[in-house]
Amino acid sequence: MNVQIILNEDVPNLGRTGDVVKVRAGFARNYLLPRALAVEANPRNMRAFEHQKRSAMLKRERQKNLSTSLKEKLEAIVLEIKARAGEEGKLFGSVTNIDIERALRGRGFDLERRKIILPEPIKALGEFAVPIKLDAEVEAILKLQVAAE
Image 1 (cartoon, rainbow, N blue to C red):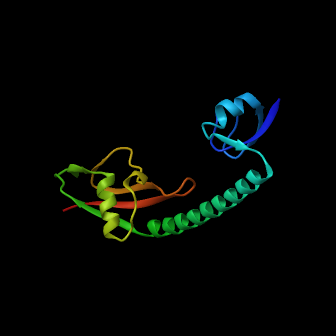
Image 2: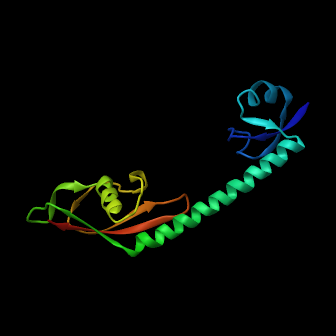
Image 3: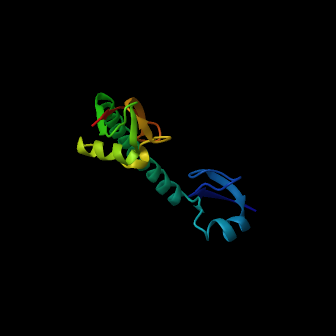
């Protein structure tokens, strides 16, 4: 006998979060329900899930709007970092995402350094384009100017 359930989490080879699927009663009773991977698909749980889905969608939309406005502000500035450099324009150290985070914090932007995508530290003077992952769908390109002290 099959039962309908709503998945709370992604289950490999079965479905993604929020899917309503039919599974064997034993699989639901012995595996999915005790581990809180799913709930029974009765009318009450369906209504509660639809409400959660709507509120999550609104929250995601608000977050995306905030990220988009932050992207516009970040792309409008040119961030300048001063570092000690040698004769040929090579730095005596490197500029990392931590340095960029500190410089952004000094300009009034509060970002996590994990969002600053720097494949390798910057070791030369010049202008660089640094991608910053603000949201799942929003990525800003920061103009970074590394100058000698």
